[in-house]
Image (cartoon, rainbow, N blue to C red; front, side, top):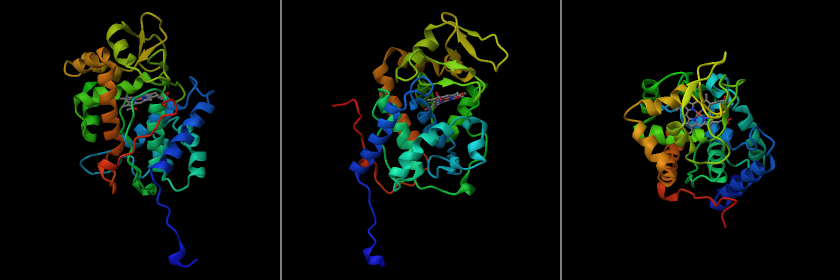
Amino acid sequence: PNAAEVKVFTPKFEDYQKVYDEIASRLEEKDDYDDGSYGPVLVRLAWHASGTYDKETGTGGSNGATMRFAPESDHGANAGLKAAREFLEPVKAKFPWISTSDLWILGGVVAIQEMQGPVIPFRPGRTDKDMSACTPDGRLPDASKGNRHLRDIFYRMGFNDQEIVALSGAHALGRCHTDRSGFEGPWTFSPTVVTNEYYKLLLNEKWNWKKWNGPKQYEDKTSKSLMMLPTDMALVTDKTLKPHVERYAKDEEAWFKDFSAVLLKLFELGVPFTESEQNRMVFKSSHSS
Ligand code: DDH
């Protein structure tokens, strides 16, 4: 065909909703993974794609999907995220027009909404880059550290103290795996549902060091089956962070609102959008009528 005959496909809201629906139905179908859902690991993929952002240099962030390549895919923090990337591969094959970097973020949006969390408005426009755009190791948080490290990492992305606490509630979801991070266990009793339980447990449980040969982590006194990382505990030992934990523990609605806003911000860090903010898409969840 000559150039005039080549039709450029410009996806619309309805097309992205179809991708949303495909991811949602795969989530429902593939319920034999981990605690019964790929949702948590999809959220973690979207977060680790975005959380490499450095506001000083404008490098990193979800634009580029450079975690497709080594060395970034092999960074210790990204261990296990292959499961999430592979989960989305058939979706990319079915909708080849979507960039992998938009797809990874949309995967996080779908996972949050399908696990009964708040709506996360989505803006497409990310493009995939080659391996020369891979970020250096060490940009994502190290779970063995404390409040100073948390601030170093999250201020580098452009977040404030309230936003650090609002983001951390994502640990209501999923679990640690000894063969990935070395840590073990879930933070809550409902790791496939978005709730404010993480904040409630942080405040209301008594946490002791777990006695084992693995890395230093906390276990709850009551059931000994839940966990907290040293970085999680920093949210309640730091006097400035703790009031936010208390507020979110009391008021799930307030956290849902702030969680949605802060995830939207995280997912858009460093992306050179052509679409305006007014054109963000709000997808219909499969359980909403
Ligand atoms: Fe996280 N996280 N995360 N996390 N995270 C782990 C699992 C999950 C830290 C360390 C770990 C966020 C912040 C932090 C999720 C979402 C988010 C694991 C276990 C470690 C370790 C990995 C494994 O063994 O499989 C640290 C440190 C921080 C911090 O310092 C603040 C944030 C901001 C988010 C987010 O989504 C906004 C999710 C979901 C999981 C569960 C993954 C799974 O497979 O299950």
